Image (cartoon, rainbow, N blue to C red; front, side, top):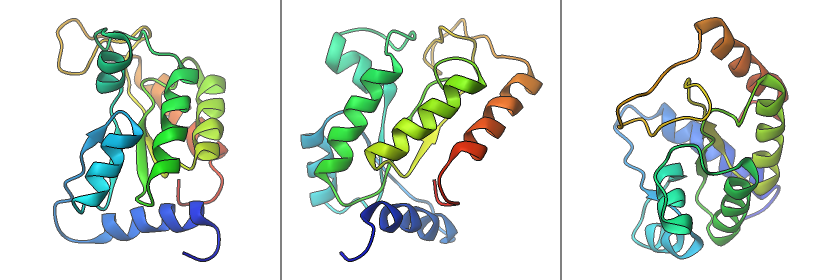
Length: 155
């Protein structure tokens, strides 16, 4: 692989998304799981917040994970594989300023993108009862912060 490996990974996500087919990509929570997924042929991976909370701490996905903990996992996973990795960034860990920092930190890990949820913080896992969402305008501000702080169009 030549050139900037981060640019290579991020560009590959867009190429995958431009295909007119369903993309199946597994959720991983550690480097060995990412290596196994890569070895069996998955072209794209994502780091699941639920899986990280459960495997690292034995906890449900109720907002126990911090940005720092997810960034650490992302760094290990991204370093272990060549496939692009999308990270579950929960709600961005706070307000639009926190979202900016989350994007910058995830770009630094080599991640190719992130999910940004619209729940109040602390959040609840998306498939559990009792979720509350933030007002639309507040989520729009978070998305704008994420877009403005990414480095290049490919994150």
